[in-house]
Image (cartoon, rainbow, N blue to C red; front, side, top):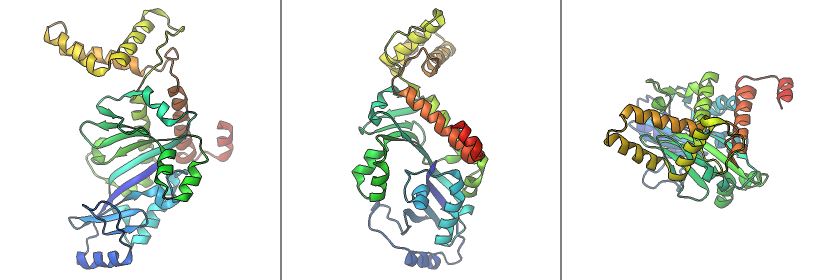
Length: 328
């Protein structure tokens, strides 16, 4: 679940340059990376730099511990991974501040990953970006919060850098990764004032909160329905719901916003009425009743639900194996 993290650590060294030089001599300095902001040294896949006499340690915790972020990396492994990294660097990193975190999950899907993208339609306050064929991103309009869908298998096969990763992804016909990237302002995303300590990753409640945030954002994404007239439609309420969905899917939210704003300007609507009308269209787009037909999203929704159930109850609540077998 937890993948890339960024730790800010204040070592409080009396002779910062001397102690830092010892670390630089201890670990290799690789030539690859951003030339404008080169790493001082690397601890396996973790990139280490400094800012204001603080160490910045950034990399994939899953890759560091497992060697890849394809196989399951559970909450139960997080403490071991942080302790291992702390021992290797020689610093108690659990006392550091968490500045970035990515929460990602892999899903074996029935169809080619890009076939799901047209039905993953809209997320309020996020910009839908589909510049690359195998990646769909929703980027927050104000902060560096991203929700991404991409073809993990094709990404690994294209890079061809790790033969073990290639062997792992070849086991899957299609492999989709869904990832929430909180690249800055983590306390703001979590709606709190105090900074997030690395040690909080050891907490069940904190990891459940991250999981719920991931799942809530996925559910808030409006999914496009197939343009068929459902036989299960009953009554005016269902018909109105269907027509609202069809309008948004056909013309888009930008056009709806323009039409509603025109009504406000000519005095036909108040601002409050416009807001309420947009809520009606949003409820229609998020409606989960069975009369809304969808092709691939139904499969994806089901797999997301099962994966979240597995993580919450098998890892975070530690249900006994006998009960797990009954659930399966």
